[in-house]
Length: 244
Image 1 (cartoon, rainbow, N blue to C red):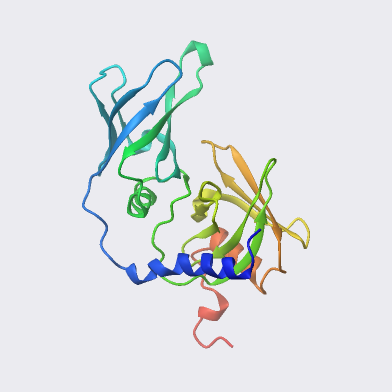
Image 2: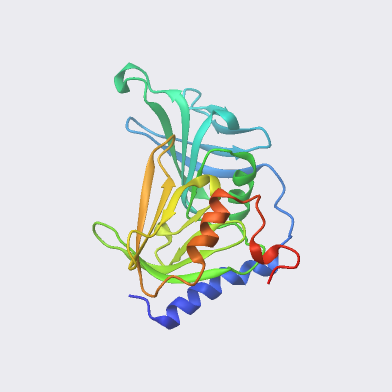
């Protein structure tokens, strides 16, 4: 279990990159050397994220693919070395027309915060990410939590920024960063818990992240989250000219 010292370190680590705010993204396209995992065999190649499409280049021509961004159902960056691309491509009669998912292990390089920021700019569907793009300002609100899991949970902090909601933890695979479009609902089922319903799995599939609150939610937390998720174009009261 993380103590307050560890929690402060976690919060500090998320803020360290703030000095990068406004820094230009790396030159496009992004290229990763990868291994594509599949049930019957696998292949090695390069995954290229370009301005208009994602391309998997490999000498195994049967495995080579390219997808326009509108043909991608969801991208999951589950760690710097694990990516999944869920597409609208049918799997065929064996899976009754289920959409195909392509899983990649990065063997050279890593999925970077700049790549995730690029995907946020190019994909309208939800992006599942445990790699956080650089934030432009410190978090507005922070609350220490424990994420409930069937086998082993994790400890960390939920933080609300101007442009995202994040769960920061030392178990990197549990960490998440969400845009408003990535979320279905944020609510408090009781005073001891916080639930975040996110679009994870492709389409309308929902995953609930259930957190035990180690402290009461900061004043105005839910109101700020709700306005950020559901009414982003309406100025906050504190931002209106002449407000008290």
